[in-house]
Image (cartoon, rainbow, N blue to C red; front, side, top):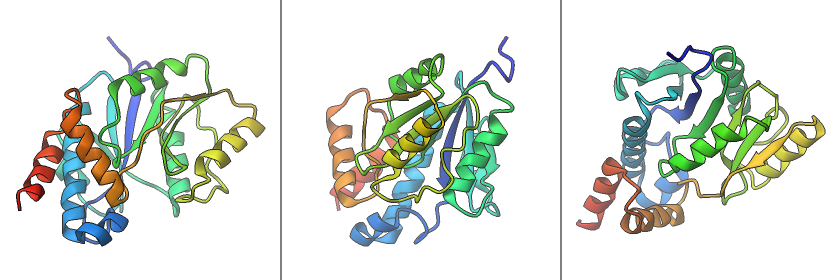
Length: 221
């Protein structure tokens, strides 16, 4: 039987879905209400994919005064993000969960298409690496995994094209062993939505029923 420390955790960083508060750049192109609907679909599909699996699913949500647990399955653990900035909140999440789990894999809610094999690869890579990063096409990263809470967040400006480069620089300066995963896109803009639409149409292994149904309904109107 797995103990808490032997069981890895999959953390999904998420915002409570409110119109005008999520996917704001995408909302400028498709409307804030549709952007919020899409984000809710992401949450639904991610929860269905990863709840009650070998890894403990932990939803790290923001803002903390919202009932995020009402949105997800009962087997999903929900923890409010703690900190004044995204960097602080990510680091604090690792600090908390690395005390409970031997491996912590963190992704964002805007990569519902993350592949199971990438998560498996990240988990295996931590046998030898101190930090695993999944590069995103915008210069950031869609995944970060560690066994210990190394501070590779402080002093790095988020939402810039240099996040991955700066994070790798900090990791190297601290002597951390690093592994990179295959790259993919975050769904932030309308061009990313088009990529996701094509992926859902052409990749039979990509099962995101709530997201696929919503996007299909838009095409029909």
